[in-house]
Image 1 (cartoon, chains in turn brown, orange):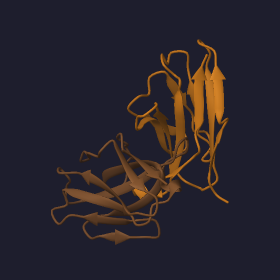
Image 2 (image 1 turned 90 degrees about the vertical axis):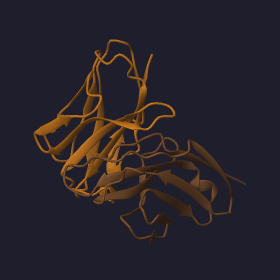
Image 3 (image 1 turned 45 degrees about the horizontal axis):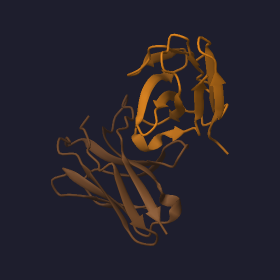
Length: 111
Length: 113
């Protein structure tokens, strides 16, 4: 599975959009980009995933570049409750795959 | 509501003692996982089980043991052979083969005193 690179930390003002980048330059054609987040002392929570097209759900939007070598998770109106560690994971979508987590990006939303 | 229950939330252990962390799910998931998380770090896989009575070592299995006698339960024993057991332990389960199908418990924080 392809490796990902994320900045270790970011700040965002409450009510503004939070844009979290992820580099995955060695991604293969059959690998998806997944985003999870972990609020302090809780288990990780699934946010969104995508293959090639941009995706949006009630939590966030995922923008994947045309060459698929990087992506951006967008929280459109960040709140204090969005303060968490955000993990970008690249994984083939078939049986036997297991989530592996790197260091992630620690997002601090400030009032 | 369906979910994963980990107990206890906080656990203190004396050096040299074995301790067992509980993980129960009522989601009817086939696969279950144990992860360890150290401060400021990502999650590392300890053991996983994709079916009852079968389990596999993850990346950091040394000093740990598991059992999977029932579909709903996947307890983790931290043995005295684990040299640095103080950590946050997370259990997860999944039915599907895709990464968005993972459900995590709320974790157990183990401290060796």
